Amino acid sequence: MKVETREPADRDAKYLKKTAVLMTVFLTLLAVQTFALELFDLGYAGKILATLAPTVPVFCMLIVTVKNYRDMDEFMQRVQGESLLWTIGVICFLSFGYGMLEMVLGAVPPIGVIWILPTVCLGSGLMNLILMRRYHAE
Image (cartoon, rainbow, N blue to C red):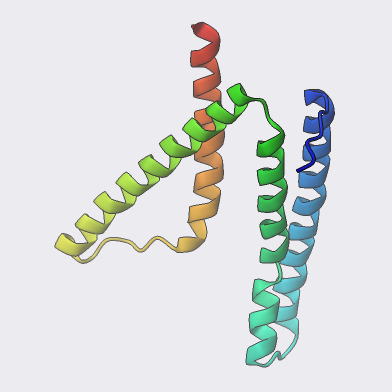
């Protein structure tokens, strides 16, 4: 297994560049998808392909993020790991509570699954900030 030793600033810049490119591709595909679904009479398969096209760069971002995580030092891996544990735990707790309300009350506003990824990303970013402040305070 080949292990590259790169400077953290170089690694971060490369990660941000790849993420920016993939985000641009995602937004472009999202715009193309929107126009294609509105302007063209696509068949069932065409609608599925157009709808799922923006997920490809999102999956590529996952691969880039995992590679970036593997390049991090042990401290940053610990912060990222704990951040994700807190984020997923809070989201699971909230979704469980919401599901219990839905089961008992029956008429709670529906929340689409499309909000899971942005919520995890936002929550993880916020938890990273909180944890980094906590570690710098110690």
